[in-house]
Amino acid sequence: MAATPSCKIKDDSVAWVHLSGRCQNGYAHGQGRAESVDGLRQYSGGFVAGRFDGEGSYDWGNGIRYTGRFVRGAKTGRGTIAYPDNRKYAGEFKDNLYHGTGRYTAADGSVYEGEFSAGRFHGRGHAFQRPAAQAVLLLGLSAQHLDPSAGRLPRPGRHRLPLHG
Figure 1 (spheres, rainbow, N blue to C red):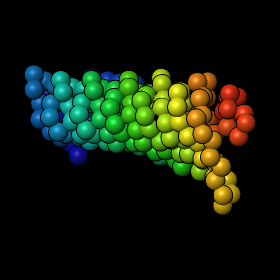
Figure 2 (cartoon, one colour):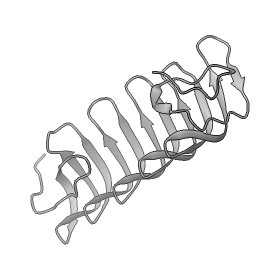
Figure 3 (cartoon, helix red, strand yellow):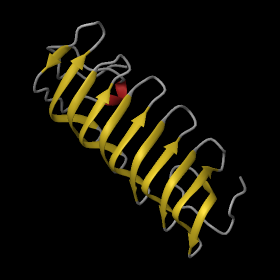
Figure 4 (cartoon, helix red, strand yellow):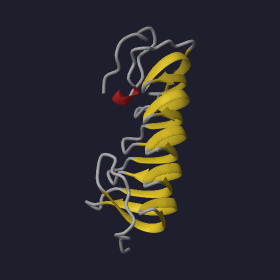
């Protein structure tokens, strides 16, 4: 699809080309589509003043895909992000990080449902380990120092250890 050269998109971590949608004052505004200059990333959804804003879908082109709310270019509000190794998070985001309540599924099938803060498990939650047919429930998991980016949850009785990938 041909780019709209007179309609700009404000760069996030990469430069973008506007593919379709309205322009206002030279910037993408309203519903539209964009593609990164390198052709790998795709965005479809709302724009305000050249930034991703409102409901949208962002595909990194490497198996990572986010669908949900953007505010001034950042994942903020409710959304879902899925990774190629089967990790998934569905819940609240703030400034591109897991923040608020959500459900994180690790690559091994373990699940944590509860509170997140600044991209980490934090506060009250429940973890379910699913490496076998039976699930182990960990009640009241308070995991302030656990990082969901590692891809699996801690073993029962070891809640304060950092996660390993």
